[in-house]
Image 1: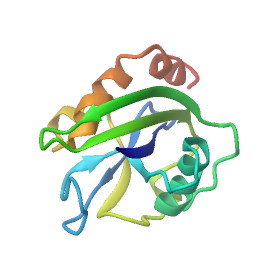
Image 2 (image 1 turned 90 degrees about the horizontal axis):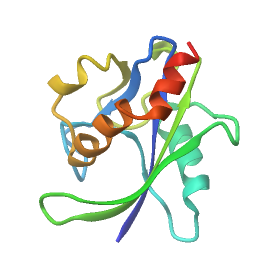
Image 3 (image 1 turned 180 degrees about the horizontal axis):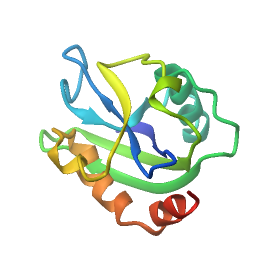
Image 4 (image 1 turned 90 degrees about the vertical axis):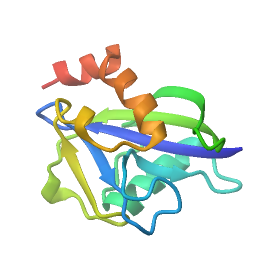
Amino acid sequence: MARLAVVLLVDDRGWVLLQERDEFAPRAANQWGMVGGHVEDGEDFGTAVYREVAEEIGVDLPEGSLTLWQDAEYTYPDGHHGHYHVYAARVDLTDDDITVGEGRQIVFVDPERIPELDLAGSSQHFLPLFLASDLYATLRSAL
């Protein structure tokens, strides 16, 4: 089973950082998803999420700044199965602070627009839960 560490970062408007994958993505090509990816052999979820953020958006988040929101398994319609750790945090970043390390674009998205996006399966599952969560409400109220 694949192990994945992903993150939902919330900006000062309450918008959520998402990645539009490109046509070269091995899974969910040309769809929108969460920033993050596979946990490497010998690596734990917590280490992986900070590494993935640095690789994908060029930002070194301070250790301990992310909150584990979900520890869950998810199965895609094609049967691909993954064990996800979904982290979240409020960040003082803008699109200009993001360096796209993978995919077509990585930007903060207005939650009102998220239902209009072609979301990857795991994002279809986790994003609505996150936007309805107490943690997201808390991160928004920190504005």
